[in-house]
Structures are given as structure tokens and as C-alpha cells.
Image (tube, rainbow, N blue to C red):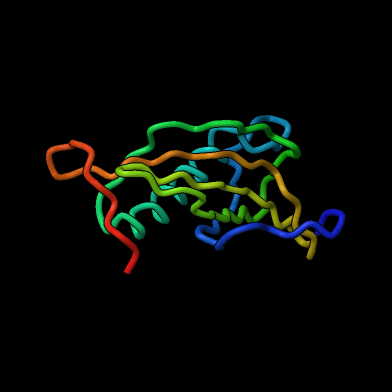
Length: 129
């Protein structure tokens, strides 16, 4: 791991970075990494909301290191706040480098999800069970 750093939160999604997701230099597109983080946020928030959620906002996201073809991208999520209909998550993306045991933090961001009913209107997030 990088400088004894460890991921924060729960491992929510793991996926492999493939050539179709990369530029000519072999660096994975930032948009693809962000999409994986959004998927993980949706999974975790939907579990907490016990229903449908959508992304309302993404805040404070900066890329620290590139993801390369062949890396395994590990997405960790932590629910930091539950509002009336919103769920705020801190999301970290870590790359397990291909053929190495090293794992490095690539980026992190705050994702805000909103719980919706079947008609697409915000609904209260249920109390934790």
C-alpha cells in the first residue's frame, strides 16, 4: 500500500481495467473511473434506502494517480450522512496494480444520492433496521 495508507469504508465494487477503457498511452479514462465510483455509490445507497436512488451531486474529486490497463479497481464506500431523502457517501478508488501486491489510492470524492419513489419523486430514507 502507498505510505501505509489504507482504504476507508466498505469494499463495494471490484472491476478490471481493460484496453477499451484506456487512451493510447494505456491510462484508463477518468470518466470510466468516476462511473465505477457512481455505480458503487448507487449500490451502497440503494441498500441503505431499501429502494431506488439516483445521483444528485458529486463533490470534491481529484485524481491523484492513473489507473493502468490490467489494474483491478477497488471502490470503497462509506455513508457519512443520511438526510431526509439524501444519502452522502465518501467514495475512494484504489488500484491494485497488475502483477503487483501494491494497492494505491487513485481518487476520492463525495457522492450525494437521493431516494426516489416509483414516480421519480424524492422519498424519506427509512430508519436503519
